[in-house]
Length: 272
Image (cartoon, rainbow, N blue to C red; front, top):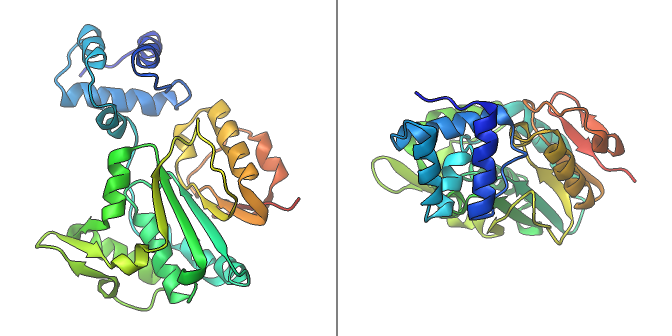
């Protein structure tokens, strides 16, 4: 297996910018290196020269982006986080007439579905507009389809119960075939799925709650700063942003403008 050194990784990122106008320089180098190594393995690329030729000949950039980005998740991931939403944050937001939620980096949509189940159980679904975005076009289309593998159902069910759920998750879907199930479409009726570059694009609306859990860990310091600043500008006063238990932010000064609401779950609140 070929492992690229730092100079070679820089050369590859510059080549991707030059040919495909995709800037990956601010992604964490360790993660980027692993994904490039995976691409080389999948495509039987055994040298730097072969990798360069592969990048030059990429025709479908969306497929390449799907390989570079990390899309692994589950429903009600980190159940303690969902318990805080269920018992504290969402009941407070429920005092508003209209609520907007943004899942930034929604991957294949398990977090979005989890939120919609929670909103439905709290009787809030009809007053909430949800935006679900990701840079990966293919993964957004998968999320919008609402189709998931049955093999993950037991884990998702355990997470749901641990988060405070009272039912069987089967209540919320129909079996598509022997290996998959489809989420009840009514759950996704107020969700707007959109391909969105978190680094380059601007979200022209404000939100009561932003979830970007376990995404920033793949960015370097300067990119983390830029994204946190974007979240702050996209929040209503008293709005919440959740970045995830596993995040380690590198001395992010923008967070000093937010109040720490829940240290364990790394949830912050904007109080201007």
